[in-house]
Structure formats: C-alpha cells, structure tokens
Image (tube, rainbow over all chains, first blue to last red; front, side, top):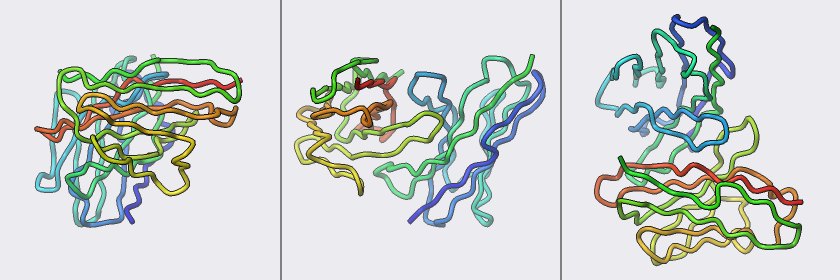
Length: 112
Length: 115
C-alpha cells in the first residue's frame, strides 16, 4: 500500500526566513496531496493542497510543489511568522474516497 | 466556511465506563466521515470509515466492539469508546467529507482521559 515519509521531524527557523518540509510517497497512483497545520490541542486544518495534474500551487506565503516523477512534494512557507509555529502534516490519497495516508508530521518552530 | 463540530472537546472518565464522542457537519451533508486517533507527538491514525446508513469499515487492529461507530444521519457520526481503560486515553479526531464537493473537513478533536 501507500507509504508517506515526511522530513524533517523538527524544523527550527528564524522569523522571516523560509521553511521547507518535504514528503515522499510510494504509490504512483496517488493523485491528491494536501498539507495540514495542527496547533496544539486542535484538529488539523487544511492549508493547501495539490493534485497530480499540477506542478505547483501558491497561496500568499504558502506554496506546494509536486514532482510526480520523483514522487515527492514539498511545502514552502516564506517570510515565516511566529503564528506559523505548529505541526505540519502531509498526506496522500489515491482515490475519490479521500482515505488519506499521513506523513509523520513536522514540528515547525519559528524563533523570534 | 464549512465547519465540523466535535463534542465534547475533552472528557475525563473512570475506567470501565463508556464515552460517546459526537461529530457533526454543521453546514453540509457528509455521507462519509472518518475517525482518527492521535497519540502525543504522533501522526493521525485512521481508525474507521463511517458511511451513513451502513456499518463502519474498521482499520486493521481496531476493535469494532470496543469502538462503536454510528452514522445515523448525513450530519452526525458518533464514536463510543466502550469499557474505557487508561490505554484508550488519546486525542480522537473526526473528519467529514462534503457529499457534494468531496472536500474533507476536520473537527477540533476530543481529548479522552481515562483514569
């Protein structure tokens, strides 16, 4: 079955710098790749997603890139702010039932 | 935007009792809802897929008699942890898929502590 690996497990960046989190997936049939932000004690919130027919998607300071050949996708956050501190999860899905296979998560720490 | 409400947000119970957690889609209909369990500093683990009007599909290793799921309407799914034990203490999260758009929305989670 599908397997999603996420790196790094912890990322610490200076406020204002960029942060990049990477995920790889194993099944080339996966066609939907969302990113979620989870704050302490709360449920995950979708921040951006990408489908396999698109290589890059951007929403203000957040962007996601997808390399189908290499089977990896990345989350890019520019001009990081303290409120970006959270745990970020990538996920992959193969079908319309949206059963997501989750990465292990990355704890992002923004240093003031 | 679409909202999924989970209740209660936290609950403390004694060992041996049962606890019910509700997951409601507030402004959309959800034929399919998902229940997850999350341990501290870990990723979400899918427990079961809940389909309105039919039996839930449980993931391997999840006891269906312990974690009872009911999805009686298009806006409500419930998870009942029966005869709870301390090892059942965890953060339980539901998600609901909009029947029309297919978008997935998550609840805020319910923290269960079993004493």
